[in-house]
Image 1 (cartoon, rainbow, N blue to C red):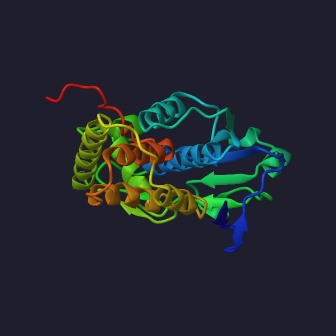
Image 2: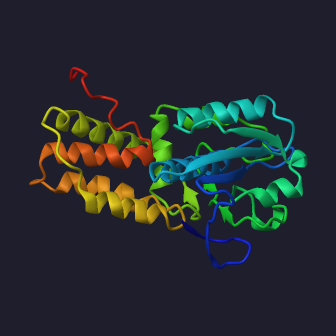
Length: 267
């Protein structure tokens, strides 16, 4: 896996200090300000990292670093992340508790903060892009928690899909229309997967699966994998069994719950 290190601007290979085990830090939030959608995006990026590596046989531990001692705001952030399909972090620390030696031991740091505000470290740094939109509260407004930002009238995984549809470092301007469209796409794909599951299984389309993993190995770019989902609809001649297996394989890392409606009675 390679990223563009935000500290140096250079392409950098992410190398674990221990064979078969990757340790990553997700550093979010600013002291005195509520968490926001940008922090959720960094957590989703960490989750995609873990799922990608684990699908390729590597164990991953994620440590979440927040500005202060974890409290109500951190609990709300983790609850919102859970609704977006993010696995709980293996560790949780206040920023002042993370010593330089611990940071140096990390293989990768992912943050919603600017590179200049992050502590020096030998770990490559990936800075996720900011998120703005109708559900974004200004940091100084003291407004709503991340949980209420993510589920208002929409499938919470629609927000995860929107994150995955953008380059991980690119800014996102979110609208209610974006969330509604993403919710509709998820419903359509889930119906397609449920319908395809009724047919005999076939091997997945190896080229689509490989392309998805290749994209994720470059800057955690999930866009290729998402485009593969669209392409699966367009391949009319593809056997339903192969379509189903390809959807399921890609969803191992996208975590959009595409198999949610399998076995359910329509309507």
